[in-house]
Length: 387
Image 1: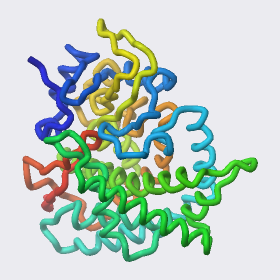
Image 2 (image 1 turned 90 degrees about the vertical axis):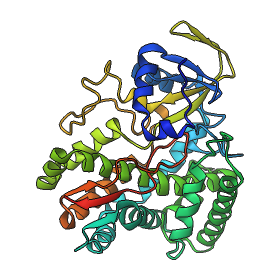
Image 3 (image 1 turned 60 degrees about the horizontal axis):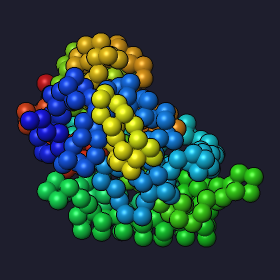
């Protein structure tokens, strides 16, 4: 009997054999452990992303959703409300010229990379990526320095879930409540003294007299902090993991940093942190001989779709020359990630600076400790040794 449990530590460790069986044998699969249907083929996931009228995000997009978040963020609304939110948030992003952040991001990366000079072994996450991503987030949003360690701790807890109860535990909910209170304090400070940072801009974003509601401002900034810390960190660490495991690709991007852009796209396809998101059906849908009922939740297994040979030839091969069109590393359609430009830029700069100091590396452990999360997949520690 085939079982697919997105809360299983075995799935965290290696989801790809299960993904293949899902695509080949059970492309529309009911998972009682998850309490939802699972779609694993690239074409079916793209269809669902495009058909937001049927596959609604309004009841939450995380596999295990945080309370009271649905309906107030980009990822948990459908058009036309989603379009309004996206327009207002994008307006704030456009006012914040991200290109001006390239130099401070490089300075952050260079400083952290320099601390690794002379070390034969280091924890990529604890010594580099977690510090880098949280400092980048603080620079982008304009958060006050000094809170980095606590903000990262709470953001990591927010995206986790309890693999036994398959719910958010008290520690996860407490972290979410702390983050909302923290965001509320920063919003109040920026309204009292605007300083041109993204939080100031979001707090006052306006198009033709329309502004974000107070709950929308609060939960949007709370979500941006969570995504900026953990999603970006997961993206960066999975990229480093892919390069550590593929020496030829690593040597190529070190020799020619211009190849990093293509390597980033292949990593987003091949093995990225954003693995599974959910939708809720607004009507019955029959697919691959199964009938999913209105009100049922559906898991869109991005990680499975990114390894679908129906879309990507030789999908289990990491090929930085592939140029994978249509990968799902940043979602798609109306819910494509809004922060893709800053994420790509930060990861590229971060790895450029790391490679100046540590050009050759491989991972130490075969078995990695994985973060317990039904939505995201990334290790909690990645020990690297100079190769």
